[in-house]
Amino acid sequence: MLPHPPYRSLRGTTTAIVGATGAVGAELIRVLEDRDFPASSMKLLASARSAGTTLMYRGEPLVVEALSADSFVGCDLALFAADGETARTYAPHARAAGAIVIDNSSTFRLDLDCPLVIPELNLETLNGHRGVIANPNCTAIITCMGVAPLQRRFGLRRLQLSTYQAASGAGAPAMAELLASTEAYLRGEAFAPKALKHRYAFNLFSHDSQVDPASGYNDEEIKVMAETRRILGSSNLPVGVTSVRVPTLRAHAIAATVELDAPVAPAAIRECLADAPGVRVVDDREANHFPMPAEAEGQGDVLVGRIRRDLGDPSGRSVALFLAGDQLLKGAALNAVQIAEALLIA
Image (tube, rainbow, N blue to C red):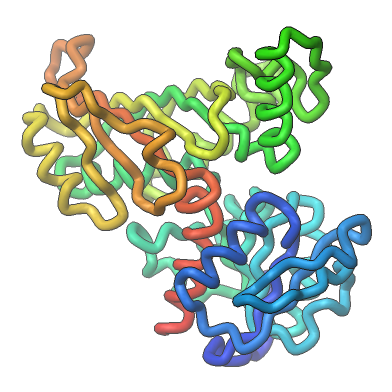
């Protein structure tokens, strides 16, 4: 990237949301309201198809404008909640106008000049940003929130993940399709999938991203592996991932096996995670109560439980965990707003 333009102060911020009518965009609006983000004015942007839609912000109606190269004049902050092509095309225009971009797509995540930030874990990487900051993949965020505290205290040798990913990760159309296909299934009616390739009601299937024919891994799995290594600051960390789309609306769940540098008692793992910001331990063996998407939805913590030794590792170094987090909140909108709040403090 080129040296950044002279950015305006983020205090009294004029904020733009790109993709305001999508699932993440709607959540950004709500999070900014709920956290009383000091935006002096708000500009809602979307495709020409959605332009003219009216959305509410702080009790006032705002008309969504069509996104263009000139949309960012006078903006201090641009929160992108659109696809990669939109980010590649319009983030440079926002940056050239003097706005700081926080992008939720995968476009800039592996650009070493662009910070990849989870505020609870690596806020120091914001220093020296050049005008574009990447919000990590939702599954990588939820995973790292539970794994990074263990890495820091006990050391990390290997990570194996199975991810159970909600409809929200595929956007508002997939969420609507889950609801509609479930209703049709319960009525005994046929339903032709459109947003996804397979029947969603009472079904699960391999993540719907493209599969690399050489490795057999899909794009989502490759993203999670690469971004997790970058966030944890361990480029050679062995990471394996199997990603599955499951019929939940907005919370992802992850089964993780974590190999540490030495054997660690589950009680010490539980204590470490209980002290971690943004993490809530849900690990009641007696009541068989562990993290669930239904309890992760609508709140910002990452739930972690099912903390136990991995009996498949004779060395005793491995522990098994189960995590759940709201994909639209900590996995997307909340993390982005926390980054913006950190810029305000700075």
